Amino acid sequence: MKPLLQIPGYCLCLTFLVSCLTSCSVLKKKKTAESPAPSGPGLLRALEVDSDVPDQAYDRLKAIADSPSANLPPATAPSDTPVESPTPLPEPVNPRKDWAHQGLQPAAIQPGDVFFQNMGPYLNKVASLIDPLPEGEREAALTALASIKPKRMPMTLSVAELAAIKAEVGPEFPLPERSVAFDIRMDEVSTKASRLEAAFEDALEGTGSSPGASEAEKKIRKQLQNTRERLQKGEELCVIVSVSRSKEVFGSYPGAPLGKRDSELIRNALEALYPHLDSLSSEKRETAIAITRDPMIYWEFDVRKLSLQGERIVIETQAFAAN
Image (cartoon, rainbow, N blue to C red):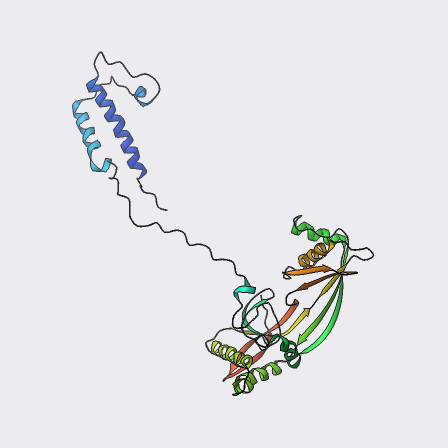
């Protein structure tokens, strides 16, 4: 906000000096034998009121004091223009909510998802070969599009490793006091570029364009048409070709029983180790804590850039690193 009044420093000094000299001269002219000298602290006590000031000097100093350059500018009337408030900061992005549109699910990752932005395990999608389908048909369609290979990865967090994590996350994020064993069972869902390209072509020119196409097929075709238009404009779009995912992760204390509070502690340990795993849920089973996430726990995904060959959407061979 600009100050209402700005006066150069030299003007203030000049005004102060003139005021002092003027006061001194006036006192000299009006001083009589009956008027005592001022007493007490202050500016007047410091002035030599009985010094002799010639009339010519008095008139010259008074002319300086009365000049426009020695006076303050007249007070301005208050402006009727309202003061603009500062622009508020934008609300932080909630990708799960803000990126959901046209039946696309930002929190779901599967081969055939076309996107231009991601925030951890959330995709800002343009199209998907799976999302628009009815929920009961998605897994079957994914199996027809990609191969699913199960994997199992045991992992143990020692007491020393948990202490190091605790030093980073702070005491407000409680963690186990003993070592934790995780049983991570995952599926690696992957497809070939040629298979995806054929699926795009079929959705655009084949079943997706037939008179008997379902509402889901029509929606997928419309999304891919949008994808093609954006590629024609030079936009950078990517596609998922493989993803590693888990439906559940099991955590336990080797050789020790589990209590009620251990559900939160073991879930916190997994989330602290993998910060991208947000919105985790956990519950105590007979011998382990089961940790889940809606819709899945995603570990990593492989991304390729898209381009056009004529009207055909093609997938480039070089891997593309997503954020």
